[in-house]
Image (cartoon, rainbow, N blue to C red; front, side):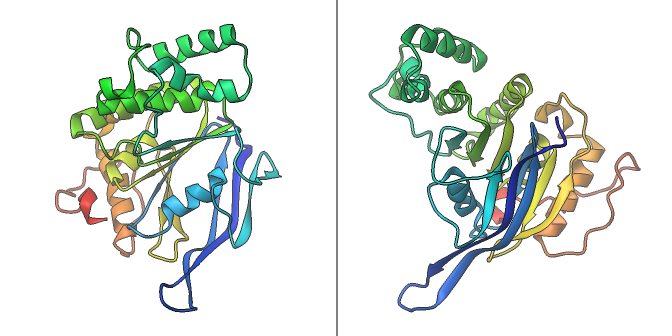
Length: 281
């Protein structure tokens, strides 16, 4: 991972008109965050703090009312193929097979058919869907559909990948499997990732850093370093003392409590009543 900034989010404001009045409601206010090249950053915060609004702006589906966003030092201006996104609802094309869903971005880029085939073969193997190339989305489980969505977003080689609660719709066991598979894919591709989630455990388990967002209007409250070893599997680090210490720190920030200094590698602490249930945020 390089120390060079890949994404620079500088003082983003996003406002909407309150229903039934002329007053402005700010979803984001002065939101700033820098993400290094090849870094995996998760964003966690209360419901309604503007996390998904931020991703809409990053992808180019919405415009900010103030501030700027740079990728590789250049301002973004609308949607482009240098950015990929994976959503909670998969957003696959039901009339396209697994292969043709994965090849969609390549078709837009006018990649020749043989090269498209080679690329889709590689990503089908990467996400473990060999044998399902010609299946349609309705023939796949939710976890398999999300693998297709991830492969489609990576196949056309975007500079960065944005993920908006991609595993929220799958069951707990599938979610854990998908988290570990995502880390494996990220380690192999080296992509820069911003991942939005409501789950503190997921945020800590995946990330190099966790960006904690304040209540509305959303702004960065603190960025927490996740000093856990790489390569990593969420299923393997979840029960470690250091994981629990970092998770508790993020929980305290979300509860508007004054967090104690991190003591990674120190004695075990009892946080059995301190971990915030996902549904509570």
